[in-house]
Image (cartoon, rainbow, N blue to C red; front, side):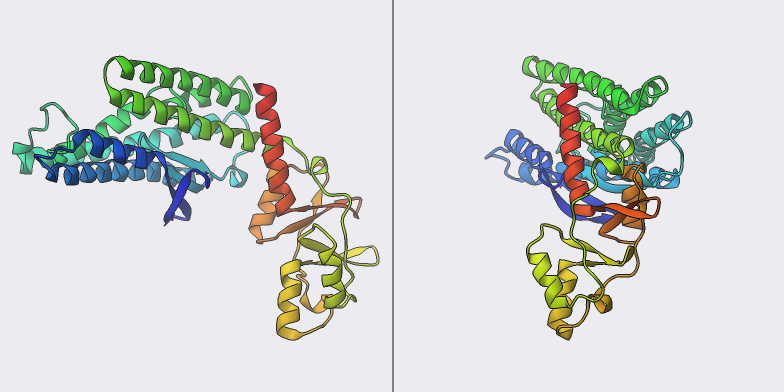
Length: 369
């Protein structure tokens, strides 16, 4: 997500990012519409891209708001020209995996198209009443020379296009939800993505024979399907892998009686960023390399006990990665000790958790391939 999109702020707690394909759309529209005889046409084309951008944003906000109401708030919204991708925080879901989740997923999926249809209906009614010269029913429906008509039909077409059973379009999400009733989520996603990629190829081939816009839509659809499949694989890793599979068992510890200079010397010779602080057989705190340096700079050489964070949570070996993420995010922690019968047997840091997730997700994708 971060490699192929740029940040554009936050809305309702979700990070909003613009995918690079919007730049492709911008260049495509300007290139196909620019005329030396009518240079003002480029400005209208930019306005048309802005309209598409606004329609997509409203569409994705519909998903985000309904997802939040259903207990799975959005953590990021990636805007693509064909509808975007809303990444939901599944680790905070209130429903247990089972028969009810597919109904929730359908409600979230349909919320985006319903927002666009509602906007199209209201805007269309206003245009017919206030600006009949816009000729709402005249073709072409979406054109830079008629922005009011384009706004109405951009919302309508975005809604109808997203209802296609081509994942990750919303119709494809409905299909995935139905498939998940009789197969695991990862398999359901893979099946829906395959169907979506089939649609993408049809669009690309049709575009070569009929209209270049269809080729562009096919490319966008294929890219967004890849993004969603990767997200689904990460989610399957979160739920299926236990902490004992990724925890660090060979790790350095500090004592509360260690001086900060001694702690820094140990930290220099370790790849860890965070260290459990042990007194006897009990864990009493956590301290990071950054905290050690900050304390040395601000207060001089004191003891680890005075600088360590005494707030931490513990986890069991059999807990899932999703459970660890919930604990890390709820208290803004960077390390979780893993215990067995009240004995420290390993640690999980945010850094090693992300590395392990990436490797496990790639491994599963390769095995599926």
